[in-house]
Image (tube, rainbow, N blue to C red; front, side, top):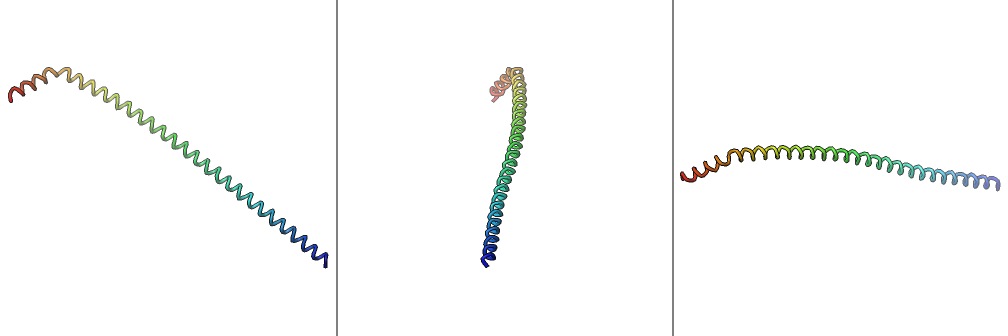
Length: 103
């Protein structure tokens, strides 16, 4: 009878150890999964941030090009307007004076 009890105790001890090992493996696997999940998430965020930065740079370059073009257009229009003024200022002043004298 003692032999049977000892066998049962030994089997129970083995089963308890097996359960403990299974719990340890489960925790280890959960930990590994959490680490892998975080790694994938961080990788995604890093890749997404790189895409955002690249797009920002492209947009900033477009803005700078547009600003340069607008500045050139402005300078050209200013030169044309100044030239037109210099060419016609005496005539315009005389016309204004004549108009004012008529009133």
